[in-house]
Image (cartoon, rainbow, N blue to C red; front, top):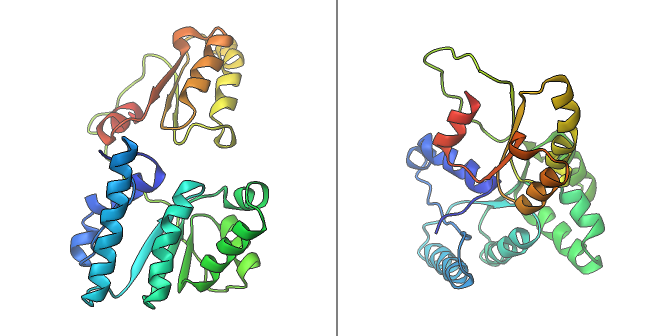
Length: 238
């Protein structure tokens, strides 16, 4: 089973660009789509391999990618191993919603654990300047680095003219990323441009998006396609 989501997409772009081969990097996936047994087996395999490589003195630095919710706490166990063996670590925070998660969904103990992790890794990478500032305020760190997510832009061999105007959403389908706002805006868009279509691609609250489109009577004007691979994404962007 493979993984879907923002972190998986970023790692795939790293791999496609040859980063792992150029820098002698070993990638250890810790999560996949599929049944619970498959997820647990992959997690245990990654943990065993990491510990074995550390004991064999094959690890010089570990770059840990995290989001929020289960992703954060799953990776936390790996961070504890790195702290215990004093392995240099980089924590790459992909969750722009980390401040909201920290404030609204975490109790005092969870907040303390989050601050501990952010403060004790050797370097933190944030995906936005806003998140960078928040991490600095919470930890007192001054060496947080901002690195935006990469994008692979393929040249279009021949210019193409669209027969009808279209909107495309790519990402995790949820309220805070604007997916539902786009759906709610479609009736007004269609009043000005009757041939317009909206395609929504990604993981997340897909059934809710489809239900909202149906409730607004949008029919085929809103298509919730779910997760799409790179080839399909490039086709949709043209």
